[in-house]
Image 1 (cartoon, rainbow, N blue to C red):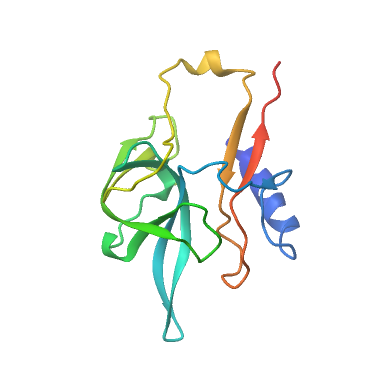
Image 2 (cartoon, rainbow, N blue to C red):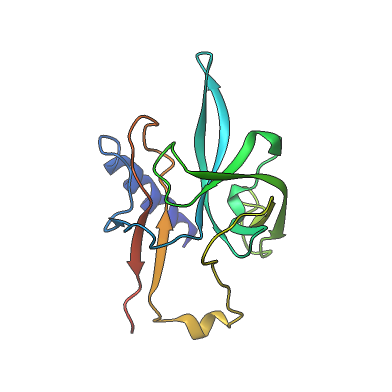
Length: 175
């Protein structure tokens, strides 16, 4: 299974070399569709110029907590990271908040530690004021089979000078 996943990722990356990498089958979100989704960005200095580079996508669960994928955790200084939120266009945002601390929930023992050490990342931030926050549901994974879902994401691979908004993909048709 893991080998097939690596082959799939390789093929997707190979096919996307000339194109701007976006969500296949996705669409740009409408204004206000996912107000709780943020862009976790890092300050990068390149050729003596500073810019915020996309790191990961996250979702605010409350005014001071966000959640992201476990592979997003890194050992760099948090003072060079912010989360942009609101109706975010690539490298532009009306709002941002600083990250105070991150916590990783360890990945299951059967996962390859070389790929990721953590399953999810919790992010403690300075307070944000949103009209809607994301929600979590404690359910057994087998009860989710066949339920449709949305995958919002900012692309990491889009050149910084291209203004692209959040994209979303609706996945998994009911069985």
